[in-house]
Amino acid sequence: MPEPSSPEHHHGYISEKDGYLNRMRRIEGQARGIARMIEQEQYCIDILTQISALNRALEGVALGLMDDHLAHCILDAARAGEDQGAAKLKEASDAIRRLVRS
Image 1: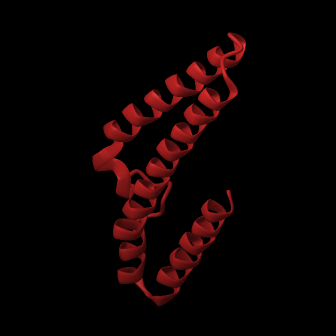
Image 2: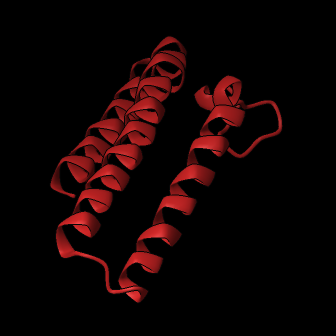
């Protein structure tokens, strides 16, 4: 199995890369929009609504990346051997724990 930093290794999200980049650009725009709302002293609840939408958008990207990681990276590691599979599974579990805490 190629190392994650090697040229032969492809991350699971590679086929969706353009979609992820487009979503992140929209998220950047949302964040700038929230900053403008604060600069313009708009209503607190309207700002909080936009922050909630921004959080959902980021969660959507995170869940998509996690799905891709499970379907590709973990599956490839499991095929490569028990030790590599176990290490990738722990890595994913730790990432899920961080996502749930945030």
